[in-house]
Length: 116
Image (cartoon, rainbow, N blue to C red; front, side):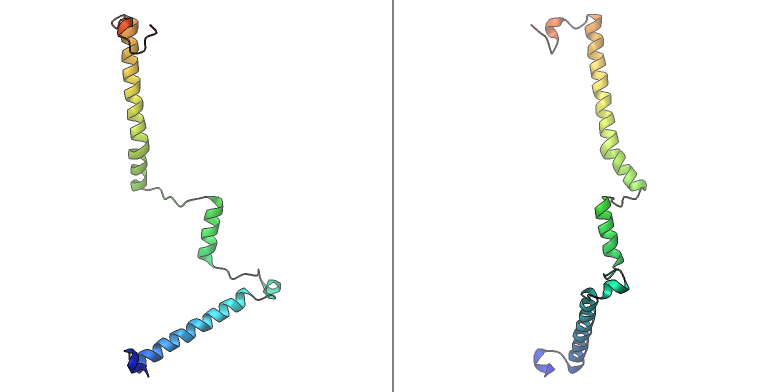
């Protein structure tokens, strides 16, 4: 029977045992999950640690973010460094322009934001 599908009798027997084992585990899981009397014995659900961990993290909106050298460097290079350089450039250019205006080196007609 198995030769016409391209695998031996031993491989066919292995596949059939795997299929039977999966069906047995599936049946047992569904039996435990849908048991109406289970609430009297336990909590009433099949506990899975990974699913509980995922649901807890999603509910509390806590992302797992380990602090190490790579993440600190990424935060400094993408957030802190660009903002601080932009702030320094703006501060120096504005203070230089204000110093020129207050000293009288920049005439009112040459100012970039003039009223007349």
